[in-house]
Length: 223
Image (cartoon, rainbow, N blue to C red; front, top):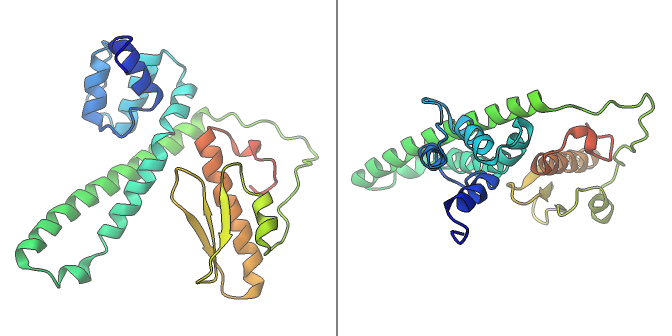
C-alpha cells in the first residue's frame, strides 16, 4: 500500500470511505493531506470532507463513495439492537459480570445512536444530490408478477442478489452482499405473493444503494 508513498495510501483509504475507521482517525489521516475536518462534525460529515478533499472529487461522487459505509453501519445498528435486548439474560449472571455487561450496553447504545445518525445523514445527502431521470408518460417497465415460485422470483432479483423460501417458517428471505439479510413474513397463502414482492423490493433498494443508483434505474416498476 505504501509503495507509492503516503499519498497513495490515503487515496486508497478515501476511495474505500476509510473502511471502518472512526471520526478521530479519519480526521487524523485527512490532516496528513492538509485537510482540516470541521470541529464537532459527525462521522458522516468527517468522511465527506476527507473524501472530497483527498480525492478532489465532486460532492455527488463523495456521497457515492461514503455509501460503502452503509452496510457496516446497518450491521452495527442491528448488533447493538440485539445486544440491548439481553435484560432477561443479565439477571442470570454474576453481579460483577452484570456491571461489565452494563458498560458494554452503554457502548452499544452509543454505537446504535451513531449508526442511526449516520444513516439519516446519508439518506438526506443522497436525496439532495439525487437527480431522478424524467419518466416518460408511458412507463414501459414491467411490474412484478404475482408469484410464489422460487425459480420465478430469482429472475426478478438484482444481479448478485439471492432470494429463497424458508424451510422452517412461512418467510421469504433475501440477501444482497454486503448488507444484512432481509425477510418478509406471511400468515396465509394469499399473503405469500405480496411477501415475495416485498422481499424483491427490499433487495432492489439495497442493490441500488450499493451501486449508487436512483430508484428510476430499477428495470421494474416496483417503487
